[in-house]
Structures are given as structure tokens and as C-alpha cells.
Length: 307
Length: 155
Image (cartoon, rainbow over all chains, first blue to last red; front, side):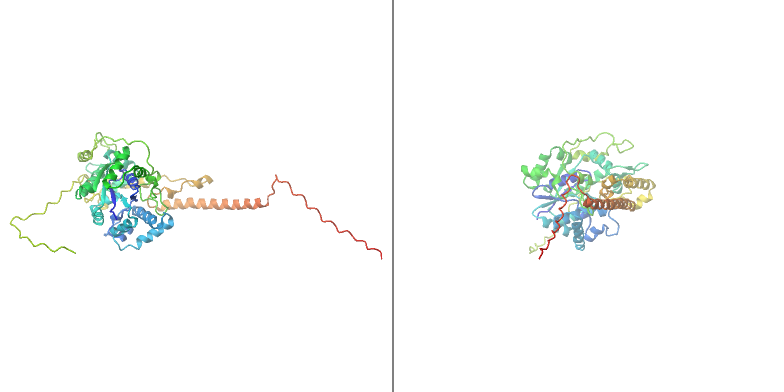
């Protein structure tokens, strides 16, 4: 069994699309957001509560959908109300196991296919990432990048995006009035990813700019195949260009509808047309004071190759 | 099997120190928002939000915005039967109000479907007794001949 490939990025960085595309390679298997490593024990995963009793997220019930859909698909071959009920029992019978043990069980079940997964929630704490690497010491990581202006504007306009930013503390409180500022999340999530990946051998991770992925897909997919040591022939690349073929690229049954961004689930196919890369200069639309990017955000973005 | 332990080397006067831990990148959140938890990309501390009137106001407004999906008008026509139900749009756990509205729509659908079923069965019943107009009526069956009375031959 090969350790999975994880995609690390702040929310609204094309993670759903990239994960589904890469996961369509004949040697790989893209999964919805499992969120397993946000908990140590499966009991805590199911309850959504931290060891101190605090609820991990007000949306935790929804954040289990990806795991329910995955178990239903793996062990029933379908995602229906009945198979999701079965998946719930499957998870509950493993309540005393660690999330890592259960993740390994899933990975062994689908071997020789190699899992590809992204759960932005893993970035909420370094503990989650340490749990992940302890379970899969040979995991590989795609650090997915997006221009801060594009990512921030997307997050501000997404349904529930501003509330998510608030809950994650992406608020500039340095002035008299608080200002919701997504660049804080963009910076801190990427800083955490860089710190984590620097502790690993260089060949275990790759940086991919989301805009380049969409604008020059064949070349970017070939680069990812080469890095993973998997076949990069035309049929394999073609398969990766059909994220809609995944059984997880659609809305699930009523008792586990999500597991991914609802906008992606409603329209998972690639859309023709390029993505424009915005500029780092100029005022930010979401700042009432007309401020531009924080110097450290601009510096990090330039390190990633943005201008 | 573990390898046999290597003989311990005598420590020289100059001890080799472990390399210092790599400095982590400074995060922006603690600098711009002291109320936020410092570790990782965590979450806002509820206690600090409650204690800060401006943050509290912002949080309440955002929550209302997120929850404030425009209420669908109550269903009134048969066309409403096939409109998307609220659960199809829910992407989070439901509030009591959302569940009530969903129940109302389902209840309306159930009533209408019951009425449609009753009407349909009634129509089927009528249809069973209908006589087609474009098919000629079958010829009336000939009446059976009366048996001829046999005259007894005179003895």
C-alpha cells in the first residue's frame, strides 16, 4: 500500500477541482474531504468534540459527510440512504480506534490504488498535520497555491465565506472598527503549510499554482505524474481531465449530501476558458480603508511567483 | 531485531548540541487580531468575541447574513409540487424554522399527491366503464330459434 497524496491549501484555492482531477488518474483515487485527522479517536471524530468537550465546528455534522460517502462507496459500491446508514454503523463500531488506524484501513482496502485527499480543516492546527504524518510517514503533498487577490475575493463572495473567515479569526482588529480581512487566512494557512513541508524531504512535496493548473492543464498534470512516478501517457492525462467521472463528484444522498464544496458538486466538469491572474498592487475591494496587501502577504505571494 | 548497541563514546569537553529548532514563520493573525487563538489557523475565541462589543456585533451580523436565506413563499399551486425543496439547498445543519418550512412543503406535496391519486383512480374507474365511440357496436346476438312444436301424428 502506498501512502496517500494530500493536497494542502487554504479554502477557495481550487482544491476540490484539483483533487478530483488528480484522483481520476488510473493509479489514484480521489476522495471527498474525510476530515479524519481533525480527531485522534474515532469517537471524537463522530461526536465532533475536542477532548475538552468543546465542539470542533458548528458544522461538524456536515463535515462527516465525506467519510460517510467514502465508506458507503467502498463497502456497498453505492451512495444511497441505506448505504450511508451502514457507513454510520461502520464508523461507530470503530469508535475505540484512532483516526489513523481507520484511515490506514481505508487505504489498504483500495490498494493498489493510491488515495488523493484534501481536507482544508487539517490546517486548523499543526497537531492535525503531525497526526497525519505519524500515520503516513511517506505521504506526498501538493501545496496548491492561488493568487491572494483571487482567493480572498472568492472567499468573500462565497456563501458562508465571511462567516467562516470570522470563525477562523481572519479579522483585522488593529483599527477602531474590526475589518474582515481574508488575506490573514491566506497568509497564515500558507505559512503553516510551508513550515510543515520544510520538515520533510524536498521530494515529498510539490508546489502547484492553481491558475497554471487551469491554464496549462496538460503540462501541469504531466508534471504531477512525473513527480509521483506514475504513468503520464495520453489516456491517463485524458482521464484526469474528467473530474465529473468520480462517484464523489455529485451531491450525495440526503443523509450525506456534501463532503465537498457544493458549487463543485453541482458543476464538477472542467469549464473551457482560462483564468486571469490578478495583480498584487492596488487597493483591496474588501477593505473600507482602501488598504492594499500587507507587506508580508505580498512578499510571500512573490515567493510563490505571483506579481 | 534491533541492532546491538554501539559502545558509548566518551564525551569530549566540547559537547555537540542539538541543532536549534527551526524558527516558525510569524503569523499575521496574532499581530492583527489579538483575540484570536495563536496556535495554527485555529478559530476565534468565543470568550473574547463576547467580551468585545465590536466583534460581537460583527459576528451576529455575519451569522444573520448566513442564515438569512430568503424564505420561499408558501406553496399554492400544482406547479409548486416540482419546485426544488428546501433540503436540496441546505448545506449545513438545519434550524427549527427551516425544518418547519420543509415539513410544510412536504405536507403540501403529500396532500396534493393524495388528491391527484384519488382523482386519477376515479378517472380510471370511469374509464373502465366507458364505451369507445369509434368502434362499431357489436351486432346483437341473434335470438335463439324457438323450438318448433311437433305435431303429434295422429295415431
